Image (cartoon, rainbow, N blue to C red; front, side, top):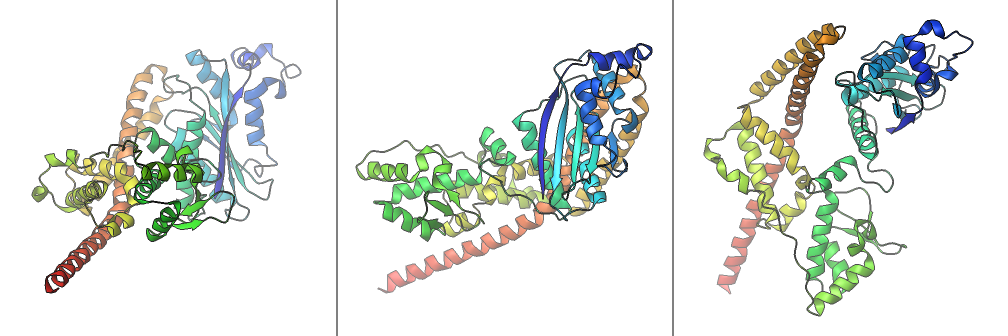
Length: 439
């Protein structure tokens, strides 16, 4: 498990600029490291030999650690952006005893490369001076590729935390599940884009239960029937879905879902006062242009799975299936993108997917080598930017391939299980019909 944080470093660059552009005017007694202000401070702190085991755990992304400050300043001078935010200071801390120094540093480098490696200069250091090993990142605020400034704020934090959690999971480390009161970045982003989330699924189901309840006691009873655990002997009523490991306070879902609001809504429904229903998005309209009988392999698997999502949202499936698939619904956008990728690249088999991935990785290696030879030539800035754009697309393709390898087997298992549930539901309906005829 790793805790993360990132914040901006502000200050004046006057003395730093003088130091770099006119070193003969700056003697040692006048310009000490401390007087090089904010940028020097954060670099010196990050590189502290006592903390980094004599600088063994100091690495540079798109710069040399020994001249990190000078290279960052030169980038700022090149694009004329030497004011306001100088750099960003990032932090990644691990639980005591969970990682070795080598592993922590390796994770820190991966995090920096994935988040900022294609556009920014980053100094990565690992500190060993506390019981908890932790990484520091000094990120230049100006891109060496196009001179654009890094955008910090809450979005940068969410992206950093999400990627850190992903890498920790890859290394088998523990991951914090939505710590504190905040939402995960994935949930926040999904809400911004109007896609389903776990909390959104719960709210939709609560809306259904409220409509079906005559009293608040009915509401609690139906909740339990649908697999929820309800905690009422506390200050704030909380519930836990069957697929979750933690309770969620009703009031945290919004003002319409506090205990008092739910009681009021039930009373309004009982008295004939209706609220407008939210329109249900049609997940299947865009699928109509595909002919299922002409799809095979991965394409057919994803098509049928996405079609199932649409049936669930329209309430055309047995309740057991809706309940079983509730957590999967929030991944609709992920699966839809994977389906389009398979269609666009005509990929149906594992072998085809592996070949596509290997070809993309080979192109990445070639372009990365080509880019490294261009960095020393200022006139090649546009060419470097074109390579970066191409690398970004290729890395996205490789990531999609990895996601398909990871998701396809789970999708197949879910599809088979849902088929069994549908068959059981059909048999139960036949049994009920026969029983009715006999009577």
